[in-house]
Image 1 (cartoon, rainbow over the protein chains, first blue to last red):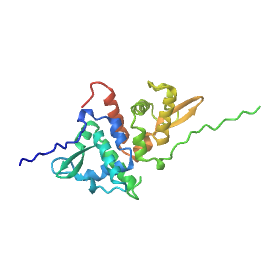
Image 2 (image 1 turned 135 degrees about the horizontal axis):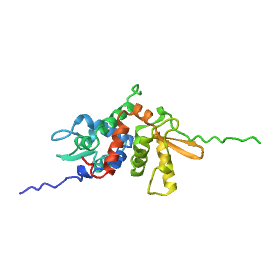
Image 3 (image 1 turned 90 degrees about the vertical axis):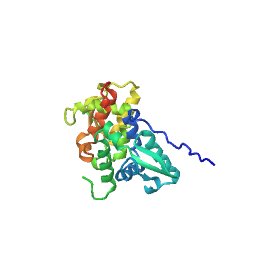
Image 4 (image 1 turned 60 degrees about the horizontal axis):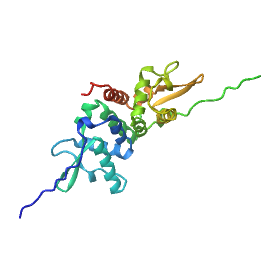
Length: 120
Length: 120
């Protein structure tokens, strides 16, 4: 009996479709900043990234899904299926090419505000 | 007859009250990005800055006022009265201290997206 593989590609903007205002809006929420900060060390590309459940957020599962979708649709993260898990990566190469220094400045600022004793 | 000077100080967050998510939200709008980009060359401090009418925006006066207020309340700009004019400056010193590199990365990205032929 033949097996079929369902196409489960999620829509992403191409690099040239990404817009600064949309990226800033996606990152203008404390939970989404937390997701971006948590995904950063997991890298991007084949075999890298983290599942949604690896990012600990104090909100409901449907809100988590919403936040990941906003980040994906803005071009901040890439989401793909690996088996049954949805794996997420920051689109660092695309963002660093489009907006040099932006992601690092944002992630550094986000870490500073959430880690006690690191304010300037 | 004595004259009284009305206190017309507008409320601004202190540097330590500024939050990254709020700054990113303030700058996540094409019109507000345009305001920030237009104010940048006018500098900050005594005698510097630009009036609202010096920033050319294709929206109604009340929408212009709204956008400037969002930027002020987020800590992105300082607004003060000079005579009858409201003068606006980017809070570059505060933002560069809190989020090194952020403002430059955003302004560079905003200019690139609005100036033709400068895409990477």
